[in-house]
Length: 154
Image (cartoon, rainbow, N blue to C red; front, side, top):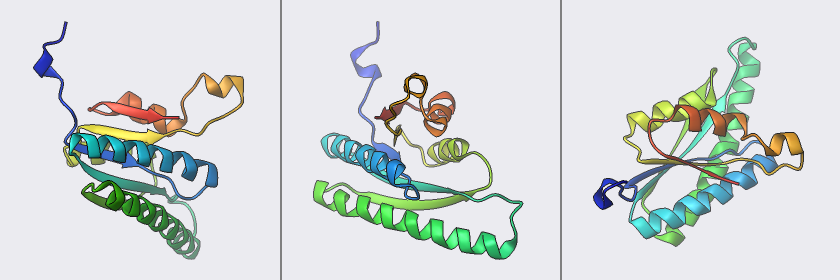
């Protein structure tokens, strides 16, 4: 049995959001609203992050165009969360990170570097019985590898 004081509300929350695909963007904003409500209630700081995955093997001009498009979409999504954070009166900062590797690993590494107490992220709703049994690959990777608690919002 856990002692009452061994569990505390998070002081620093990381919400990972996605802006490039409409279905993922919707689940990300739902996760952001959940994280904002929790941060407001617990008087926590909230950090929003978009991780942009750009393969190493593509031609540099193509990479530059893709980077610009994805960073613009990320900025738009993070700006929406920033507006919501003002409404919730929550201290908010945002970051867009680029990786050619695992998005989940990038999120976990950031949460460790920033001293995050809780990671919140969404997963897309799906109608397939097989995929209903499984989390999305990013959510699953974060749940498996984060060194702090993870809340997945469906």
